[in-house]
Amino acid sequence: MPLVRELGANEEGPPPSWGGAIWVGDEGILMHDTYGRNPRLYPKELEAQHSDAPRQLPRIGTSHQMNWVEACKGRAEATYPFDYAAPLTETLLLGVVALQAGAPVRYDPRSMAIPNAPAAEQYLRRNYRGEWSL
Image 1: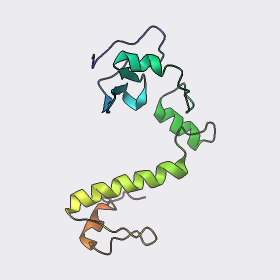
Image 2: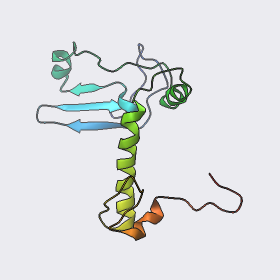
Image 3: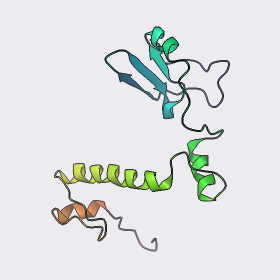
């Protein structure tokens, strides 16, 4: 199975990068480029069996960064709505806080505190230098 490939004749956008994912299942393997672009099933017989699978998510004609900017400006719908993406991002970042703290954290979102591990709170905020602030 090729891990690096050229952009196909009917594909648009930037050339495929070294990024992507490989999902190994009981019946086969799903591979895709960065951001889920260009999904492929192996063995190839699976791809033929599922060639009529509907595309359930809308496709955007720009980068995900520009989609986010346009959504912030109210000119487009974000591919992942902010009411879904914000809590997901917060959860993932709290996992990073727990790794940095070396202990489980029990986060209180109302107070933005970690009562069971106050020392981990240093990873929740940034101390800005000199004249810099938010």
